[in-house]
Image (cartoon, rainbow, N blue to C red; front, side):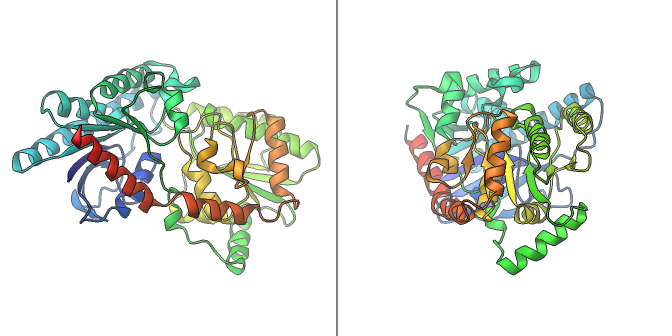
Length: 406
């Protein structure tokens, strides 16, 4: 079976959830199982445009971010141009392969690549499978504005033309209005993000990493460290986490929080968050990095944490929580995480009922306490048992074969 994928991310070491997904998935696909070709954006301009990764051929479309700190209109325009280039490259590559030989399926990842999927389905009559990775354009603040409206339009259009629609969790189905109750929607769980690239340390290494990370922020001995990683967006619960720190401080809990990430492309979130930290007098306790961590840095921060907190009110899947859990981190997640993904009902993590700062503060204090010393071990065991990329790849190829037969 020959498959052409079009995506906003491509390995190696991509930013963003979709890129992380494809890095794990393609790394687990064996060449004898499928002939996979990926057309995806890449931030690594030094890499060859065409090369092999795992069991796949990767056609990279360079996309750097020189506009990331530009004014918003210019930033949006640059993004649209980059996405248009990616879709055009995907269409050309799929058509070229089709003229040289049979293409069994085109797999399109999320709405930004939907134009390529629509062209392949309507003009070239190729079978298309559509991956809906997120319902953010239908949810809360992410549903506002012309970009979100365009996302909903493209999402609906390709969902109606694809042979099968693939989602990562049942919560995603319920969050996208036009997917509920449809027989052509299939849930395929992902693997555990970049956890396969992060060795879980023994106690001796953990102590060394802990001291290194804490010293880099000047965190005194005896103060507890909480780590967050993700986008500075309202639905990620970042403001509520800052408010929870203030509550814990007022209650006598000595804690610091490192928050890795950025609100880009809407960097106004970064400034508002910094202002709120200052207003609450938390400048020495809340460290806003304003950037994403590379894989090695992220691993060290998750290992060094006394607890990790990801208080999202909506989360399409939640790679970073699973990565933390795989490293035996005592992890708190918000109500936006699907229980079936993070295993909260089985005691693999602590899941709050709301994103209210009081609830979050209570859960973080519980994670920092000594009442449940086996929490980290249960977390790692759950991830290893339920979220392997090999299982995700096998199930995905089964779904693709079903789409071809339709």
